[in-house]
Length: 79
Image 1 (cartoon, rainbow, N blue to C red):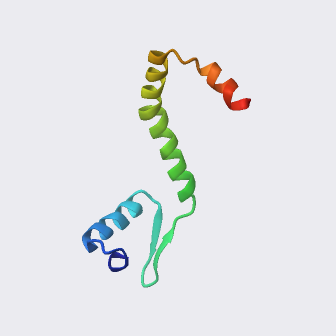
Image 2: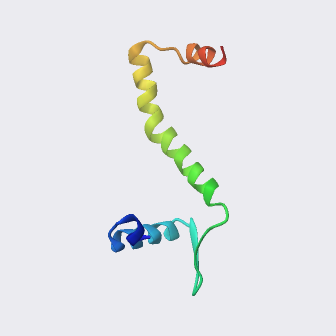
Image 3: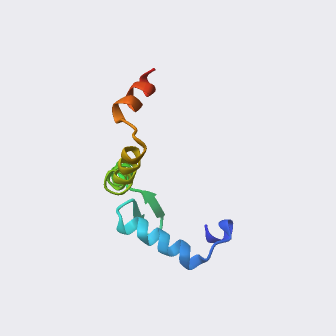
């Protein structure tokens, strides 16, 4: 992978280790790495949590500063 992407092998190894630590991949000795069952759901759940905890408060604050009513946005999306 490192050679294909012209990346530092240590960087790629750290990324794989991170995926393993997060339970996103499993290792089968002598065979390789495989995507772990439920990895997609874990990634999606993590992204949702980050959005709600980190991104949404800033968005909500900006909407308030600009006088944007969330109900108005919902109506625009359904129209």
